[in-house]
Amino acid sequence: MSWQIFALGAAFFAALTAIFGKVGVSDLNSNLATFIRTMIVLIVSAILISIRQEWVRPMHLPSKSILFLILSGLSTGLSWLCYYHALQLGPASKVAPIDKLSVVLVVIFAILFLGEPLTWKVGLGVFLIASGVVLMTL
Image 1 (tube, rainbow, N blue to C red):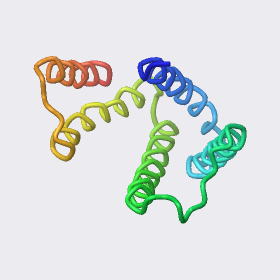
Image 2 (tube, helix red, strand yellow):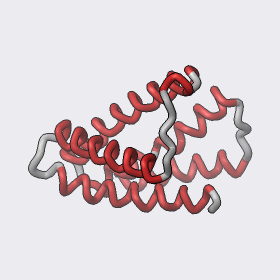
Image 3 (cartoon, rainbow, N blue to C red):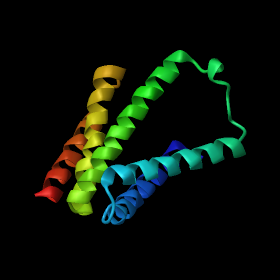
């Protein structure tokens, strides 16, 4: 399957995450809700890796990969904590679009740190996303 199918799946499940998360934090502390969500992600990931027999001994993993996955995990945790707290305080229809400003930031970071090119299409897309977030959250 192509990466586009998985990207659409990610978008679909991210949308469900906002809806389910909004309901989930309505009667629960947002930090505890994030912890519970994280445990579910851990369990599902472990099951998938076990089914596919993809476990690898830690000493066989590249240290650069481990470092950046640790940094990614820290970023994910902080993102989820902020996201769930925002959902607890605000409407999902406004929190989710602001969260999607991450797309704009990814493009900027990819240009600055990964050397990815900025094409006119990407620039226009970033502008439209940012404009859409502003329109949706006013």
